[in-house]
Length: 387
Ligand SMILES: NC(=O)c1ccc[n+]([C@@H]2O[C@H](COP(=O)([O-])OP(=O)(O)OC[C@H]3O[C@@H](n4cnc5c(N)ncnc54)[C@H](OP(=O)(O)O)[C@@H]3O)[C@@H](O)[C@H]2O)c1
Figure: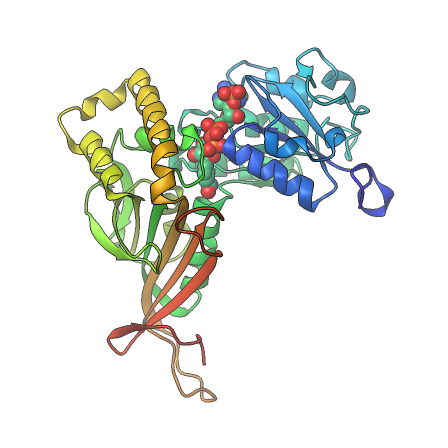
């Protein structure tokens, strides 16, 4: 499939990536360009062509200047092709391509992918603009508040015939699929715990650091003992056992979208989500900000911005020693399914799915891998499941 044609000879779709020059946006664009014939437009306040995209068919990448805080700016960008040639759209690095034609004929883009966090600070303007323009929407949101409000627009999206998928990515994203996979192993689920450990920057950009400090500002609701309770972040330390090369790592209670949504997806008694960093030193610094006497400073936007920039700069150095990667684990317990007559073993009372990923040049380097363990007769084991 070439870059200009799509299935059945129809024009290739146009994808608008908000935050497209950021770390996540660039990775998303790279995947789209490598694995589909779609064209991408990278939009942000200071749009630039990331070096990793420079070598790819230049005609498939466009840049657009867009500030999400400017009312109406996105709606103008989404308006039908004539509107898209407004001066706000630039393509300074790559030559302009012929004006893309929307598959629907109604809007300039067929899909908007929202990667311009921090989502705690975003309103629903992007999703609302997509619904109004009947453009499909996908985001990598990781703020529980944002996700709750976005899900509330589900019916409006359906009425407009818009597919809107919130919280895709690794966590949230794959973590939710792991939780479902684990939950499906039980007749009834009792408890879900998701543990995450991130080595260094985890490969993400400074906005992830902003998100971390924003989520430390206040207690968050967690589903514990069959009721919603307020929990203060970065407490309740636990040593979680990750497979090599991560090993045992400290994880702490943390506000996540999964903690907000999984109790609505599954009937269960408890959902706990815990997060930690490597090296351990970063946890101590984060804990100090959450619990120490200077914690009130996190209410100040300038302090959050300063801390995010300093932390990001620190990870750019420490990444060389700590490696870059992430591991996540779902531990689920529940009532076993009844034994099947054709199988010797019955289903386990607990299961642990762990996924770990590292960057290729990292000291932690290993191929992405999934570990599956079940708790059986007093011990965690690694048998092929279901045999
Ligand atoms: N679901 C998951 O698994 C997952 C994983 C990692 C990260 N995330 C989320 O993904 C988001 C992006 O992370 P990142 O690592 O890519 O951060 P990043 O490298 O800092 O990129 C942020 C992007 O947003 C743009 N941006 C910021 N404010 C904007 C505004 N007002 N209008 C338009 N564009 C704006 C920035 O460009 P300009 O400065 O030029 O505007 C930049 O391109 C974060 O919110 C993070 O929490 C989700």
